[in-house]
Image 1 (cartoon, rainbow, N blue to C red):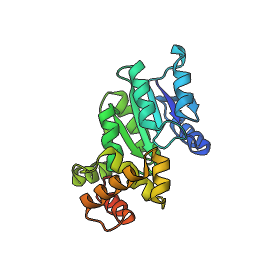
Image 2 (tube, rainbow, N blue to C red; image 1 turned 180 degrees about the vertical axis):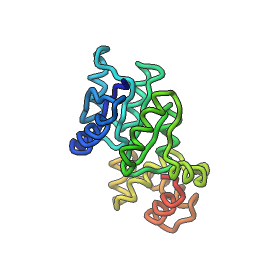
Image 3 (cartoon, rainbow, N blue to C red; image 1 turned 90 degrees about the vertical axis):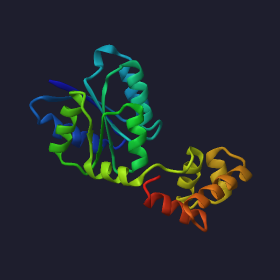
Length: 203
């Protein structure tokens, strides 16, 4: 029996996934956490640790990849499957660099989820084929982490001052990052730069 922990801040999705997986004869969902912090707290108890962790990428506190990294630091070789509603090449690369074995969109079928869990439990990779192809075609991003961060915030419609506050940067530094990012993607303004970077799979 493969035991599973699920971490998702959307309780309906977490319970639905748990119900679907529990229908499989070789899978058992042992616990559900509403955040990365909660899962890490549960993980401190050796008796409640499971074979596989299924973690939502977008969590309220620390995100799924950071949660996975902390779990794998205490449990080397842990099989983790990241699930997300908004799969992007940058996120997949980050997950793979962190040692995550599986990456799957939430639109996957119950059968695909079960197969992915069995695959990562066997210490093999399971990556959504469409996202893998998108990641290969995206190539290496020319943007730095800070440039990506300010462009993500620009994509939310924030002003330069609001971006600076959200990113904990000085306004002048923020404008420099935005200018550098715009130059690298060949955009006339920050929102165009965000759009182009998203289309290239760099955000």
